[in-house]
Image (tube, rainbow, N blue to C red; front, side, top):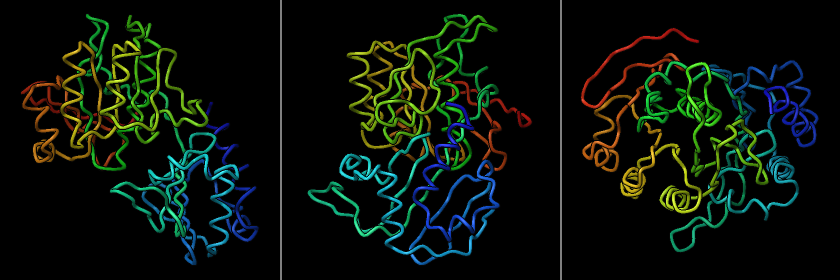
Length: 315
């Protein structure tokens, strides 16, 4: 599904669900440039365009937000209950709708979110070839595989977008460098890589990729290794309690891995006890830091213990 098709699906949804007054207020907005649409009860709608905000002079009522959410759920909120408990749903085109409101917790687990206060529509944008600067460090051409890699950045610097493109490239193969495609298992805990909707990836994740969606990494990685025979496992935003153990299990099983984590420098990683365990085990062959101020650029790369600094212009 290309960018225009994704935007058309979003426009159809907005036309179905947005109040007429809000649609009129947004009629001159170019959705191709919008990253997020933030809607809060009795507050102006805010469109996020890069680092800038466009404030739309329309306040949405609680009933209008509920109606919008019901349309996003195809008028079957129950069907999306598992995603709702995770704080978001994925809609056609791979766009994601973040949810806030009254969180219902039972036995330490979220069972529902009621009395919706806000919705954050994050517009899905694939950027083909955005990972090209990273691939020279990620791909092991001699062995036709990848290096165990950790991609690190602060939120919003593009690590998930780059990870998605890496999945596409290593799954399809790259004849121009004589790299044959490999079997990839994506453990898509929050649905941000594949953007599954009713079992179908809305993003182009390649021809040799399998997806385990909406599953904790500790379960998904083990399931993939046992049943899908991956050569590479992919997971976004590691750092939780069980991540070190399951990633070590995967690597010791002969599977390569590419992961992402939040942070701005090596010190940040060392302060996370789970990631620090993996560093001490020398799991990662490459740690790539993205530039927080120049989206898509590499700040520096650690190859084992050797620190190499690089600068790349925007591609």
